[in-house]
Amino acid sequence: MIVPGGLSRWRGSMSQEMLSYRIQCLKLKRVNELNNRLRDELGRERITASNACLNFIDYVSTHTDYTLPEIWGYPSPGANPFANGNDRRRRSRQDSSGTGSCCNIM
Image (cartoon, rainbow, N blue to C red; front, top):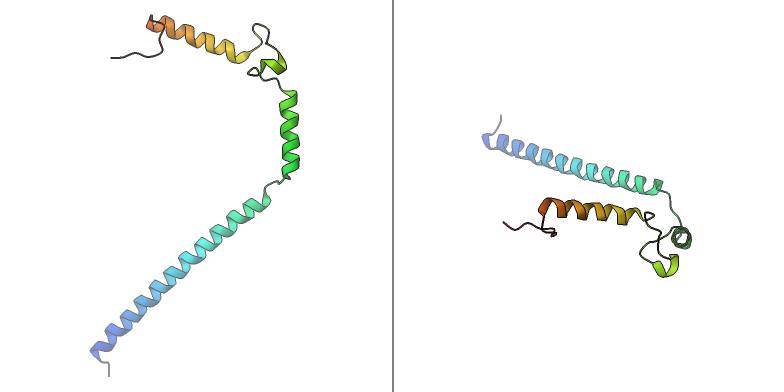
């Protein structure tokens, strides 16, 4: 003989089991995602700090920097690609606005 209250207790225990199962699935999913991220990080190429500093020093000493004319000297006209682009932008702004300013106030 089945007691009417027993059926609701059985359903309640099943819903608790389903809830705990879902929680366990979410925890497993998070652990797997963390594991994948750690594997990706492990696969990255690593270099020591001293090698990184040496690479940085090598790059800085072999590439000219136009913001340090005391070290590299002043560039010849047309040799600085950054200066040429800025002049063109300034001229186009002056031509379009006619005032020589960069902003239009309405």
